Length: 199
Image 1 (cartoon, one colour):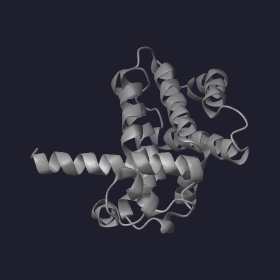
Image 2 (cartoon, one colour):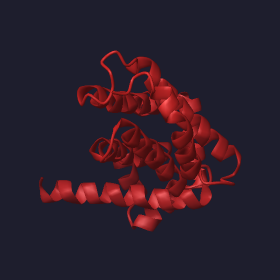
Image 3 (cartoon, helix red, strand yellow):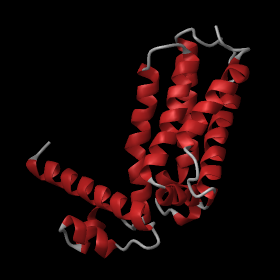
């Protein structure tokens, strides 16, 4: 990587971090590109070098983090239910730590993907389903789950649970802990959902 590429990557990272801080405080609607660039000490033109619109930052914020949540779950010690619980609780925990306002933006982007111009960024829901499929397939490959485990059925169910809980947490105004509620759910119901497929 050249010095120029390193500098560009650092600038992009600064823009994303500044946007996250402001969006978490004020919400995306009340955040301007001018505020983001001012916080970073760069020009407005620099912002447009990396992003078409401020909405694109919401996807950027989630992309890298959710990849590491999946990797962490795969590496987590324990059986398949422990790995899945790790994934679900960390998924919820990341959203909870990122703030209610940022969560609301993610929900809007999933519910109204036409708001998002970049085709790749419209697929957050499908990306999350794909990540859970990857975890299920890992469980099958490691002989934690039976070969006939219906990955295509179970992955959307797990994501439905996460998104349903996220929406309820969002609508409650963050009145309780999303990650704690998810952990409670996992402790009470995951074994029943997977009992026919565990080895």
